[in-house]
Image (cartoon, rainbow, N blue to C red; front, side):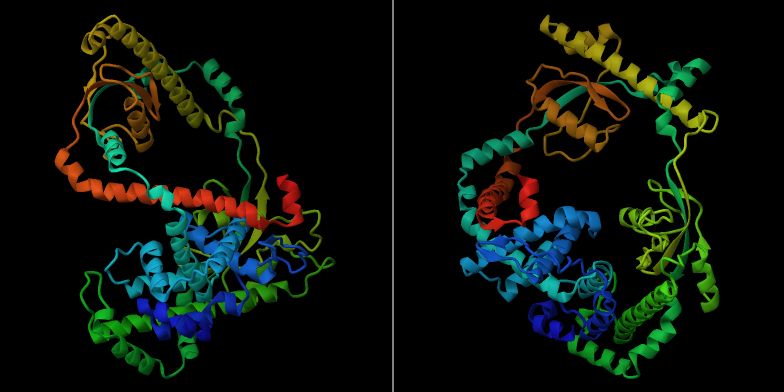
Amino acid sequence: MIGTIRRHQQWLWYFIIAAIIVSFVAYFNPSSRFGAGQGSFSSSVPDLGSINGEPITLEQRNAAMREGRLFFRLRTGAWPDPEDRNKQLLSWAQQSLVLQSLLKDYKISATTDAAARFTKEQLFGVPPGQAMPSDILNEWVQNDLMRKGGLTLDDLDRFARHQAAQEYLISLFGMTGKLITPKEVEFTYRRENEPMITEVVSFPTTNFYGATAPAEADLQEFFTKHEAEYRMPDRVQINYIVFEPSNYLVKGDVLMGTNVDDKIDEYYHRQGADAFKDESGQPLTAAAAEAKIKKEMRLSAAMSVAKKEAYDFLNALAEGHDDTHPYAPSDLGKLAQTKGFTVKTTEPFDRKNGSKDLDLAPKKALDALFSLREDAPDDSEKSRLYLPLPLTNSASALVVVGLQKRFPSQLQTLAAVRDQVLKDYRDSKALAQAKDAGEKFAGALQVGLTQGKSFDAVCAAQNVKPETLAPFALTTTNLPPGLDKPSFQQLQETVFALPVGQSSKFIATADGGLVAYVKERLPVDAARMERELPFYLARMREQRQIVAFQEWFSRQVQLRLIPPPGEQNSSG
């Protein structure tokens, strides 16, 4: 791994990654020491398809899959779980390999500066001309890329270079997207930024809540119709041991050796004081900077020790078990007692709400926990009582988990969920009444406007009070009082299709609904348009350029990629 760092230091060091810290991170990287996070497919796959007549090798696909994990993380904000990997990463990897073949054919390769710029601006959102904060990158490389993602600096380097090179292809084959006239851009700008004065009549559910008190028979009928919604969901109870890195600082110090202070001092003076700043952006003192570097190194070393302890524990847990000596829920406690660890047990919890005892990443961890069982017909060893790898909580501690008990879903009585049923009944009735009142008013308003009556006159006749909203455009993001973002976006799209003097149909919202009336369209701010139009033109051209490239690239995928036989059959 250290060799990998040296090969890529031209642009990775461009961001001032601490040499000492990164070398420790590489040593403690779980993918290199424990084989975690590889995400590779079995080498027994006979045919992985081909691109442009060249067979896809296992090494090529695995490398592209690892880049796909990083792409997935950057696009969704979370690392992919196994299901995501199977459904999405393979497709992304195939397209990435097509991209690489195109880059090869057109002799396009990203320069070091291009890869660095892509990483800084696209991965981290640092504006052009600003330096990449070393502490932010260090934290991301250590805790996100390596520790959580199981990826290496090799993967980051390949991904950055391929994505940066793709920008050259976009410029070349998305050129037709730039063929947009300034007049067309101005028309679109005016449409999106034209302010409108809109009046609305709201029908909130709170206006109807008082008339929704049910009789006992009504409540029982409502519960009977929705009984399945009140089932007690599947729940699990988990035994777990937490391996806190802070408990291994002393052992981590031993692992780091005796010359750490000299390395820290050397690194600090090589980088200079400006490379280490406090939260306000002021340079840290030499003592404070070196203390910060040492703290990060100690934490990385302690995490390595915690990982080793957790994996050693799991290896010991696996000893002596086979089909004739199956696992049991009590195994975790027995082994923990011999090794001096404390086992804790959660309260039963469901998949939707998770456990208040386990501070784990929601979806991935819960899917893993709910995969635990002791009654799998193909698991006579009962190995599925335990996860084979530790989980990581929000504090970066390792958590070894095992199943204590599963609680299957079951129906509940009305008495057990009466309060929730009563609330749901009243909410649904109030929402239905609000919708009914709103639709009746919308119909009466459209009839009245057709007859030449004014909006105010119809409102007075219907005994409703309109509200004038502050002028807004399609691009407005400030929410009017009482509206959430989805409701406001629906209002924007609805009224901008209406001419002045016309009203909308009833627009349902989360807490009722409203009817809108377009009172006036205001002129676009000419000075603002003149100031913003060049940037708007550039953005529209960029968007259309990407669309044009995507259309071209999709054709290339169809022409160049022959997927494995199984995928050909399934797609046909």
